[in-house]
Image (tube, rainbow, N blue to C red; front, side, top):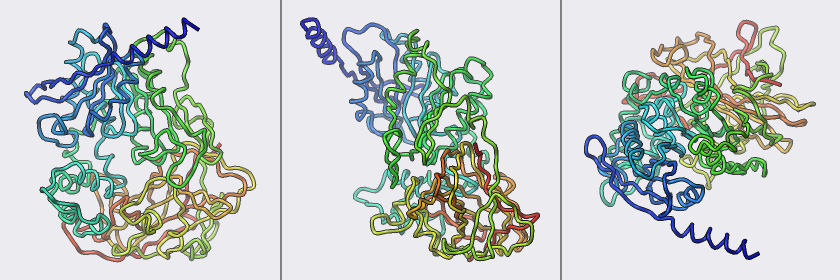
Length: 564
């Protein structure tokens, strides 16, 4: 008992010795960045965990002390032009070189062991890839959570822009006139022309204008497209993201590139992906939007990171001796974790689920059906009208959840499915569970009477009580059907085959549940409305598009799922 008391006393004393030192670290152009260093007074050399953030480095104090207690020196730094750092904030513009300069400075310090890791999510995750692409000396491992390696693909999907996301983020991270309060975001997001959204919010936002005026992945985005450089890296990476995160495709894609394309064989073996049911703000939690996934969904991301850095920064032999599965993914519905060697997991087969109707799939009360059998005779196409003045909402709109509060996570889609501008296709109740894991997509045969139109698709699990849980979603702007870089207008009345990427997903549709697909002309405001005129963001002109989905021999619209 006496020895235990002494041990506890020493541990408490050690924790009390964690001290913070704030230093202005100079960058290559003379700009100084506010940097907090957390370490024990009596500590010698130790590996360093670095977090670079635009969201106030001082908020990391609690996490920093945990890292110090785990045997690391923790460094939190304000990105250029934010909080205590000098310079001007231009989103992601300087993060690669500033990350390099910071890591180079760290490795010169007498307390650094020479090995540095980086951690954090979203913006704080992207700066890790940006620094890594510069190959700074001493960067030995990263732990990017829910982030990108191509900034264009952060903002755009299928040619449609994540409007609410970028408008809200830039409004919160740009200087506003003194005393100015932003206008109601629900009204601002409805502003046309799209180029006036910043003015509708309340003040000019140059970066928002720049992002919106480059809807194709042209040279404007080159400096912030690191994807082609990932295979050159020799860097262990812990990738963490959720299916409902708007960065799910990017994060999973980064893992796939590093595991399958890295030029260094050892690097391929040093990649790990944790893929859960979460959205952007709920990583590691059990409840996501309106769905409780149970205690199994909980993940201690700090423990994952400590284990990762023990392996690669401390080079702890005990940690390195523990095998880890390259992929650990959560299956929604049955709510269990699975291990796999890669993503998509092996032993799953791409399986088509065909859409059928008698021409009246509108609303969940219509006659839209899903079966594994393809149509053998002509079926009447389904028709809906996509009105930019009344776009199909991303979630059912309520007093508690107005347009501006749309979420990416699972919510009951039933009310939206009562709209006539939504086509709803539903299977019979499952007699045996349907399990799938991998990247889902919709292959649709479509037409419209306008020169452009959108097709937004949701993959849904319908519970016996009617709760319609969205599991995956995607969107494609018609003029980008063949190429994101070289758009082609649609010919009114012509039938095109399009592919809508639904992203990574793993689920089990339980016995008694139903598989459902919703198709509409908008997913607003998570994605911007298509005016259906192809006149660009400076035009206020709109047109109501009469859109069709065809399902007949030679034009078999279907959902493709990787089925067990």
